[in-house]
Image (cartoon, rainbow, N blue to C red; front, top):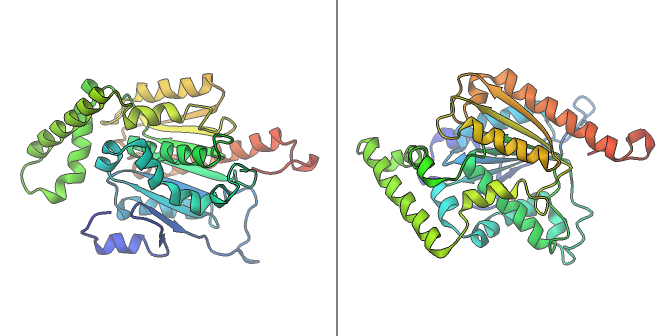
Length: 317
């Protein structure tokens, strides 16, 4: 989070416990006779924020999930762009261990290879490629802690404006613009100067990775979420996107969705009209939350079907 924390930032984080500089958690209110819990609701919603998003930017998403699933634990991950792009996979993986602490504590136990107690009633909401980088790192952390014996269980993954192509030449313009937005509060000069510096920095990181033969963070995350060794193939997948997204091309998202479908995921895609990058909820809130609620309902129905249904001794998601 930024050193300059505003009053609105602080207000958005009321009720959240800080687990690290990137990871925060808020428990849902206790159920009561007048406000009972729904056993079909997710136990946890994990929100992977977009690059350089601040608390006030994600506050409406927190409120939206509180309205949909009032008793769910909410885990919020912030995604500084430079950290996401420049750190090694090992460093990113270590940064996401607090997520396991909050959501999957059994994998941190001495016998972590037994992940049978891990809760599958988890909804992942992944925003932009920076959020995807941290989601993939969490999946890798889970895999490492279980010795590759299990994948991170979840019922639904919502891919909001992600993932896109990782081709440098094609994306240096949009990526540098995204980085410029996050850096604007630190530099008083014109945005085009900041964007030029951001492009140089991105070129340096890309060149260093090429020389070292390293897989970029963006490429790793794009592949990881469609890799059955890391990502739960029994989970529902929902893509939220638009043709007007200025950062992530819509056809790249559709290609990723098609790849997921071909590899066995149950996939739904929801296109929005005239919306910018991670701007779908602000412009079309009703359509946005209805799509998520419907996808979770499908995820629960799918889990019941696989487990034989509640009436046949099966367990819910």
